Each structure stands twice: as structure tokens, then as C-alpha cells.
Length: 297
Picture 1 (spheres, one colour):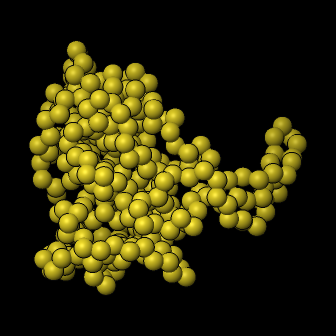
Picture 2 (cartoon, helix red, strand yellow):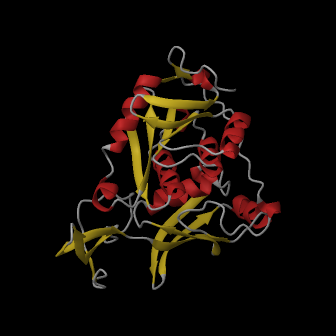
């Protein structure tokens, strides 16, 4: 028997929204279900994660529509704008407003004339999905946004990185409730977690964290970005664009992600689970005897 179709809005404990965001946006909903186990069924209620179309608009130009969890959307908009190269600094966004439409949500931004001119030069239309960071690129000729090489020099202690990854695993309320989200966070030089954000899309979670850091005036170069997903090319590009010296992922990297991290000067760590992880590029930032052996630079 299938789950009941009735879906009820709910407001369980939720991550803190960014300043100015709509408190009424619930990231989860409750749904009536029938559970089967060991040949027996029972009625119950389950929590499921919301995802909604989120349009990103610059000076009236609709640039991208991404499927996202409706939390921290102002962080998301800033992080996306920075990592996509639409703006160069937060000051390039003069205003940002979250709007509700019948078909979804919109973050309407007003950017400087200089950045609008640059946007028109390289405009592309995205029809983003939670699993793809390049969906909708019109042609391979648009596959050209390369961030500047990483200049961060902050060393990272391997033991602190392991503790931070473990702390992130324990601090994901949406995942605990629904099992449907990825998370991203930033670890400072002391190993403390900041700006943990969750989303159904791994790219969205990372953009939200990067945006939250910039809203808080924190410099990503002073630590490492952490993600609960695989380390794909797009995740490496976003981490480098944010200026972070290192990206640590729970799951595997791709070959293109490794080549990109090597070229950009980013320390790429994957399979970061417990006291184990594998370093794929620029191991010099990690402070641990013998940890970098066999890794390429």
C-alpha cells in the first residue's frame, strides 16, 4: 500500500534563517504513511524534506532556477553569485529580497551596473536540479568559468579536521529528521564549525555555507570547507572561488575534481570518515606526519 497523499505543513526544529528571511518557510512537511516491517503494517507519520524551485534574478534578469530546500536562501543567493562569478564581492549586491510566487520562490537582487554588464556578456540559462551543478549550460563554450588559483596559506591540523567532520555528522537537524539532505560547513583554524547549512542539493548546501561566511565577515581562506557528499568538479570550483585552502568530503572525488584541485592549488581531501581520510592534492597544508605520502601535488 502506498503512502497517503495528504501532506501537512509543519514546523519542527529548523536551522536559523539568514537575516531578513521569511520565518514561515518550513523546510519539512509531515506525511501520513503506512509502514511495513516483518510482514506487519502500521499507520504512522513521516517527516520529508521540502524542495522548491528557487529563481535567482539580477536586475530583473532571470538567470537560474534551482531546486532547493527553502532555508538560508539569502546565503544561497550570495554564495551562488560569488562562486558563479556573477559578482566579485558581497558589495556588488546592492539589495536582495526574497519573494514568494505561486510556482516557487525568487531571490531578486540588484547588482552594480558593472556586474550587470559582465553578466550580460556571459549570460546562460540554467534549469538546475538538486543533483547537477552544470545542468542547463547552453553549450560547451559556456563551460569556461575558472576561479583564480588558491592563495590560502593557513595550515590545517589533521586531528582537528577529523573532529570537525565528526561534529558535522552530529549537527544536521534536517538529515536527522528526513534523511534527505546534504550538509556543508566551514572549519576554522582551531577546528570549530561555522555556517553549517543543509539542502537537498550538495551544491546548494555549499553555496549556502559560502554565503553565510561572507555575510558573517569570515574569511574562508582561514580554514577548510567540509561537505557530506562526493567531491565533484563543481564542488572544487566553488571551494576555490570562495578562496578556501582545502575542501574535505565524506565520499569519493572524481578524476576531473582531482585535476582541477591540483591546477587551482586546492587541498582536496576525500573519504573523510572517523580518523581516516585520503589526500588527493596539495597535502602540504595538512599537518600530520606521513599523511601526505603518495599524494600528488
